[in-house]
Length: 149
Image 1 (cartoon, rainbow, N blue to C red):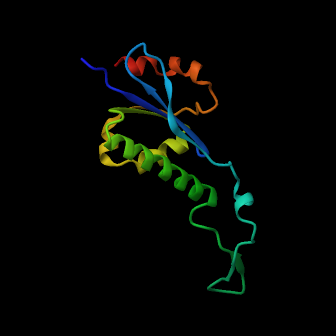
Image 2 (tube, rainbow, N blue to C red; image 1 turned 120 degrees about the vertical axis):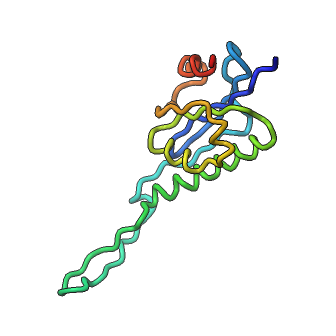
């Protein structure tokens, strides 16, 4: 019986990489061409203009507009959209059958909401941990029990 290929997405809002496991005891190998990154920025790094101002509907007060979604959240959503689109394409071509997602809780929620129904069904497990800065060699211990299932 051929082992199911499992891909492991390790991500945060600014970087992501995909590892592959070909079966129990086979270890993790980076998937070529699936490493993503963008410079981490704060709101004040992205928006340099002061917010627009508005008069109050009653009285003479004024207040600044606040964006509905922060620029950092918009940037992260675009980043996640790019990497999820790449995963979707590889899933359709049969490159993997199961997916494990390890990401910080905020990014995990963004990723989860971006997945298609088919890819959601391929998700074997989710780990709300930021493992992006852990070397590949040390990552296997985080996934051994999940991969054995």
